Length: 381
Image (cartoon, rainbow, N blue to C red; front, top):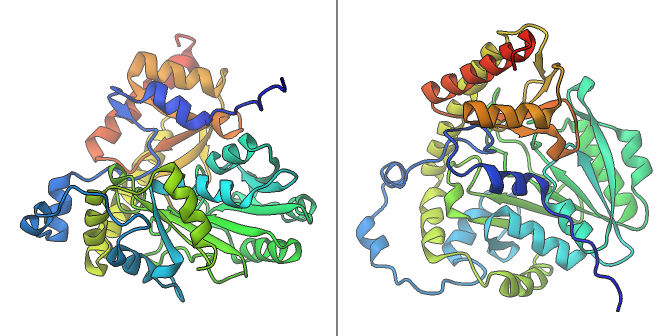
């Protein structure tokens, strides 16, 4: 009997599954602090009588017509026929991997990054080629590394923009390099754009890759910029003739997102409501990052961070006589604060720390992080 293909666990999500339940100060989240249903209903002025009159039935499998219309309106040149509604962005990634990738293909990814797409590809036996982002240059793309990595067997160039975990936004130069590499090889650009709308210095969302090359699939969800991760609702935007193949695999994987999630997303994506949701997210992100950087300055020379241009988190470098895994374990065990060690993204000496949180909660958690840091520096930790 041939041996089974080795399975590669999803390192970040395994870590969170095993640690996040019950923790008091959860600074591991990748989105802004979630809204309560009551807040969403009030902000979106939801007609509860009409909502509660909805049958608890199977919804339209590819996404309701109204929801796909509202999603399509976010993308130049897209229509409902270009949209497939999924169970979060994670299902979208899985569907794409299972639809496009075949034995003998390779996929190019950038490090550090959210590795769910890469993990799917590895579990299909596809070669992963890693191109490092350069921290000393603001997490810029290694253009020469990209050129070396891409060849005629490259099926997908996967990019998370704005990036998870760094929050960097690709420059026009780096975006152009990715488009050139994709055009040269015939690869698809699969662009995870869940952090568009979470920018710190501007109210203009990060531009989509859609329309920038012949073969682009854009992914997004209600989780990050909208503060509604519990809806577990995402989508992909692709060429209309590719949608049926993705849809057929969606029927195997999940059949559909839930009726209630689709209904609430329809309300949330009304333009005036969407603007309120993203304004809320940006407010939390901007205040939170300022609070984080002030707190990290309590121990000069220990912490540093390339300021994220977007997202609810920072990828913080630290200089202490222990590794990221040990620091994160001590912080969780002794102080009830959860952060993600950079090793889960393939880099040592870093922590991913969320800061788009309520002020008092954030300050208390950061005080605890500083107490542990002080103990380590004094030899007591």
